[in-house]
Structure formats: structure tokens, C-alpha cells
Image 1 (tube, rainbow, N blue to C red):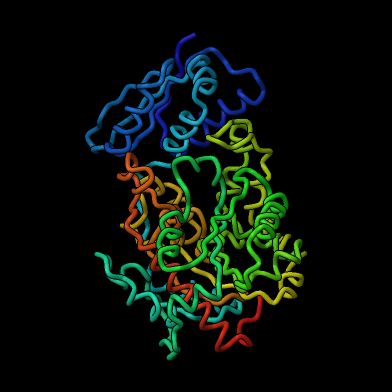
Image 2: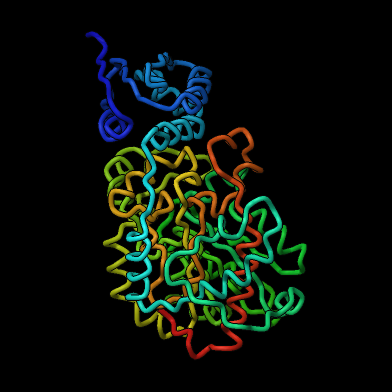
Length: 441
């Protein structure tokens, strides 16, 4: 039989050809017939992917550049190339596949004043206490690099003026609090070369804080990870310091389960900061469910064990809503306050590798960080710290430092240490001066 050839956009390619191959793998009936398809990419991204796939045996790559300045990348993925490649280098293939489906030339939409006003109005409807002014007051003096405060922390409509508060110095904060970070999806899959918050942990440790990078299983459900977190917290020194927990992405649902299911652990928590946390899940979890179930759950990724799909299921908006309906009162009863720090990048700050996802979510709301809608990252009933001009991955991961070969694919110039340090200052001030106003979500 002759080769099949179709010209597709990245979105059509993702939902068509890859899903077709994934189902074939899942059923064990993949055809020996090679698959040939064109995918339109910007030239820089195409060059990187050509280099990656060309160095992998049993796969062929051709490219062509059109008059529009974009490069068509043609991949030949036959039976030997696909399955053999997985057996030889599953992590390498999966990284290439993720890069292929996420990188695109889709335009990034810009939020209008109306969009911003609606965003703030929806946050207030969720009974959110607005601490954006206090957070700006704490953050701006900490910024000494090239980025101005207004460029890092977006000033959206209705931001209140900061009320005067006497900030504790670092030594005082470090004497009273232990800082813990909970990572998100796939966090242990790439931990040999990429550790979320590693740079922040170094800065805080240098300032005298005890810092714990808690581990979760990147491909496990929330209940399993909650149990693991409870064990890690139990093993921490009983030194009288309470935890301020920064929960990132899917780490936030894991922490939700921790607090309602493990009383000894929650007694040690002073506050939780949702740091680009998936409070209400992500529409992408619904959109990607079919291909994830058919392909990714059976694919070893880095250092992770094969999953069962529970990790993505936990991020589906309907699942999060059902959890909230069932456990909301239990979470309130913990009396632990939540704070929300949200990613909402301007177009020029969306990393090239995440632009396609950003554009997909922009069909629902232009205010998104490429993985989460801004609304979905605000914990209902929490104190809102602010909207950061950075995408989801840059919010937490020192990509340029830990993976310099991929630096061109990310806008990694975010002062994460300053963001976290300012959050600690505001959390402490709120706990000391107005604890009665910090009702749990």
C-alpha cells in the first residue's frame, strides 16, 4: 500500500493522526504501514524538532519552508519507528511527542479591559478577599533585576491600595515558619534534570528558612498523594514551626485531600498558598482525556511508573466540582486559610512551547496561563494575592537554569524567589493582624 499523506494544522494533527496511532498501540494492532504527515511549525521550533527526531533511529524527518515563513515538518512513524523507539528510549520519544503537539504558530490573544473587569468581578463573586495591594507593597521592593514590578505583577482594575502593615523581618519569619512546596503533574518523571522551586528553595535557605520540597507521585491520584504527603509531614522535625504550604498545579488538589483526610498533618499547617494551583481543574483535562487514556497512561515517562489515568482524572473540572461539593464543609472546618497567586501572562510572556495550549484556552477566556483558566486558579473564599505575568511552567520551574538546551522555548525571566518571599510576608501579616477575616474557602 502507498503512504498516506495529509496536510493538517497542529490541532488537527494532534486530535487526528496521533490519536489514531495511540488507539492502535492500545489495541496492539498498529499497522506496519508508515504514516506521513505535515505539521506547520515556526522555523525555530521546527529546527529543534528536526534535530531531535533525525537523531533517532527508525524515524525519518523531512522539512520544507513555505512562503509564509513557517516550516512543514514531515514525520515518518512506522511500526518499527514508533514501537521500537518507545522500547529504546521512552522518555526521549515522549518529550519529542509533547513538544510536537504543544508547539504551534497559533496567535496569542490579548485580554481587553472588559476581560479584566469580568475576571475581577468573578473573583469577588467567589467571596475572595482582595490582598493585591498588600502583595504589591511586599513584592516591588524585592525586585532588583531587569523586570519592573508592573511587568511582573499585573495591575488589573480595582486593585485596592495597600494598607500599612509592619512586616516581619526574614529572621523572625524563619523562626516561626517552615516553608513547604508541593509540585504538580509528572513532577517525579523529570526530577533528575528539572525540579520545581529548586531555585526558590536555595534563596529561602540562604535567608535562614527551613525549606522542604515535598514529593508526590506525578502519575497518581489525589488520595494516594495525600497519604504520601501526610507521611512526609509526619517525618518533619517537631520544632514548633508551622508550615506555609505552596501548592502548585495538581499539587493543590493533592493538598485539599491531605487536609480533609489526615488530621495530624493539617494541625501543622498555618496556611496554604495556591501557586498557579488547579483549584477547579482545567478544561484541557477533558479535551485530552481520550488520547491520554489511549496512549499516555501506557507510556513510561522518565522516572515515573506507568499510571492508570487517575492523575488526569483529578484535574477534570467536573471531578473537581464534585469533590468540592462533597468536601467543602470539611475543608472549612480545618480553619486553614488559603491564598491565591495566579498566572495570567501577557502575549509576549507566553512561552513558545505553550502558545498552542494558551490559544486553546483563550477560546474560553484569554486570561489563562496555558494550562489553567485564571478563574480556575483562584480558590473560592481565599485571599487573592495577585496575577503574575508568566505562564504555568515558568511560574514554578527554573527551566533556563536546569534545562539550558531548551531555554529558547521558554520566557524564563521570572523572579520566583521574590514572588514567594513576598507571599510569605503577606501571609504572615494577615495571620497576625486580621486572622478573623481569613475564613477558609
